[in-house]
Amino acid sequence: MNKILIIDDEINICEALSFALEEKYEIKIAHNSKEAFKVLKSENVDAVLLDMRLGEENGLDILKTIKHEYPSLEVIILTAYGSIKNSVEAVKMGAFYYITKPVDLNELEIYLSQAVQKTKANREMEKKDNQTLADTSLNFVGSSSSIRKVFELVNKVKDIDSTVLITGESGTGKELVARAIHTLGIRRNKPFQVVNCAALPDNLIESELFGYEKGAFTGAVSRYEGKFLLANQGTLFLDEIGEMELGLQAKLLRVLQDKVVTPLGSREQRKVDVRIIAATNKDLKEEVKKGNFRQDLYYRLNVIEIKLPPLRERKEDIPLLVSFFLKKFAARLGQNPKHISPAAMIVLEHYNYPGNVRELENILERACAVSEGDVIEISDLPGYIFEDIEEANYSKEEEEVITIRYGEPLDEVERKVILLNLAKLNRPKKEIARLLGISERTLRNKLKNYYENGDLMD
Image 1 (tube, one colour):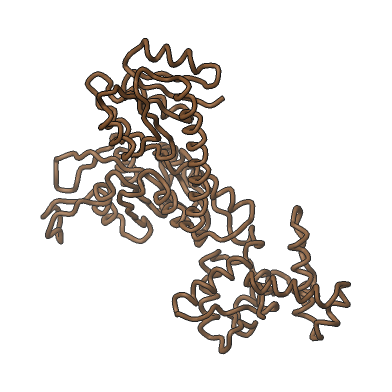
Image 2: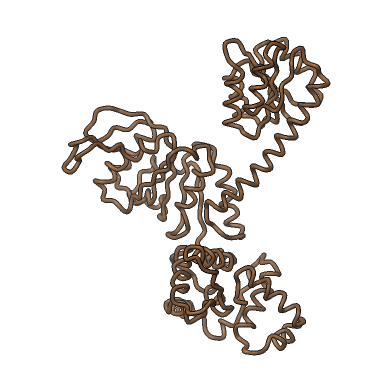
């Protein structure tokens, strides 16, 4: 049953409207803005009936806040005959429609039904837009289940203020996730500040975080607000939080608890409203056991954890990543994207990437620079890739074996078979098609599809 919120300070009107609508809708009542936003935060409301005047409160001010905080939610204004001018203004501000008192119930039900449908359509469109923006903001290309879970979790946490801890190996994209959470969330128009706790000496991290007054220490020639104050009302991303020394951890915990900072050399405490996102490539639970990380800070940071998978655990995404990066480099240089030979793709799919996606990007950037034509061949890949494959006990015979994982789609298995045969058999496509048991035309159509997806050359 769709849910309606009636915001009116007149109890009799609320009861009458509730009685008239309760068979078709679940009704929620609020007599002022405070009660209204309490309902909106806790309930998934599908439309709002808002009185233009609630005691000393102006309905236009409430409408403005609703449309800012809940842009998908449609609002119908209830107004007296003498307030038509204000009602037109309300429509300009985003109200779905206005209805004059005394209310015509037939008219109200028509517009209310339309408003509910519009709200649902708005939410579907917002959901699609958010997913597209999430994929773009993350720069995470892939269709693997593990990456889809990351997208879904980002969308769930983007609009809440809970602290997020992003974990994963170096090169998996932890900062990209943090930026996506900020970019998609309600703080998107506020600052996003970054502190890399591994890149600065301990004595500089404190001043970088909390700021300092002029003359606070040697070299402090002017006042500096610090990242907490610079990020006020926005997001502060603490990268490699596991590298922070214990003394500074205690000061950070105090700021997170009290939401005030004291710059070095100052006695003034300044309030801050900052969402914290932290990241680490360490196992903080183990660091707590070793005495290297405060347990109370760990629990304060690890309210919501987002685990990023290493690339070796989502190798099915490598062809898509390769295509993405080749297009990225081409756009940067103003050239047509290069393609990759089937043999080179097979090598890339066998490599385990200790540096994860960042390493794959670097490999492809180097390959684009050294390749002489439009196609990246095996010879354009760095030699250490092949050493790693040999160390992993990939013999020549094993390279000619295709690995099939549980739950892997048949289309992906077929793609592997075709590309391996194409790479290993120096024969015309007609003979390869015959060996595979398909027509030459079918093979060419499939190769064309792989080419369009960036899997191989034309």
